[in-house]
Every structure is written in structure tokens, then in C-alpha cells.
Length: 117
Image (cartoon, rainbow, N blue to C red; front, top):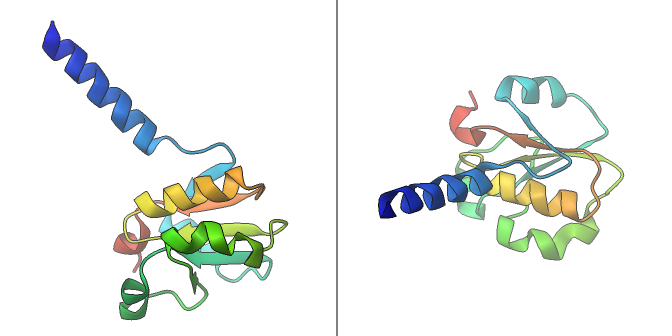
């Protein structure tokens, strides 16, 4: 009986870790390629400066996840935002922060830079 409780806690934990925040849409890297040419979108890379310097997509601006809350005022909440990281986990958290801060359309790139080619 105790193992059922442990299993339930683990399932709930992973559900809430992977659940997409309201107002956030997960997109593929293929979807991202189609959005890169649009002018009215903000592209944010939430990886560390070192990760960004090593490899990044030119259209993206680097705002590390830990600095994002303090830099929200530098972003336009009226524009769509695409967020990326290395695997999609940090960008998912960043997308949630943006959505809760009033950004209307936020896109999280599933798989992040690890899936970008």
C-alpha cells in the first residue's frame, strides 16, 4: 500500500513539472523555423550566457531564466514571445512567468536547442 502512495506522489510531481501554463503553446523546432521570419515576435533564449555564446539562433536575445523577472519591463507584453532553452524545461518555466505577467501569446519550443538543426 505504501508503494502506491509513493507512485502517486511521483506521478503528480511529474504532471505538474511538465504541465503547460495557461496561455502558453508548445511548438516544435519546425514551427519555430516558420516563425523566425515574422517581425512582430520577440525571441528569448533563457539559457546561460555561456550556453548562448557557444551556440544560438541569431534572432534570439539572451535573457537567462534567473534574470527574466527583473527584465520583464524591457519586453513588449503586446507582442508574441517565443522562448527557448537547451531542452525545453527552463523555457517552459520562463513561458509560465511571461504568461502570468500578462503576456498574451507565449510559445515554448519543445526540445529546445537540443532539437534545433
